[in-house]
Length: 82
Image (cartoon, rainbow, N blue to C red; front, side):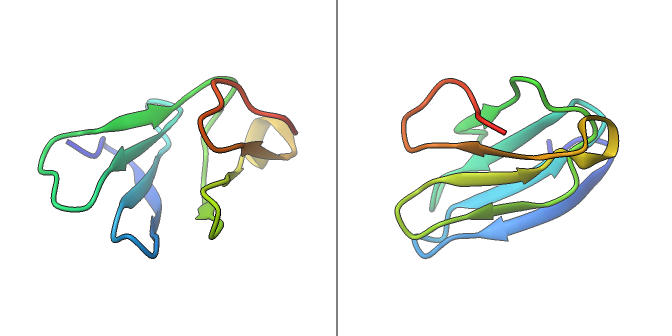
């Protein structure tokens, strides 16, 4: 389930899907071909709007509604940096 307020979505070059779930304050990830949730990014997010994934797998999230910033998760990282 995507959540009650999915507002931003990004499909990367590998056809993995990233969705900004405002209600639950997270980015949900489905890898190519998966019908079940594969993972998520949620640390420090508050009402995320947009999401963008770079060619090398870094994830950028519009975390500006409450926190007034863009957060970045590096490939295989467990926390973000503003």
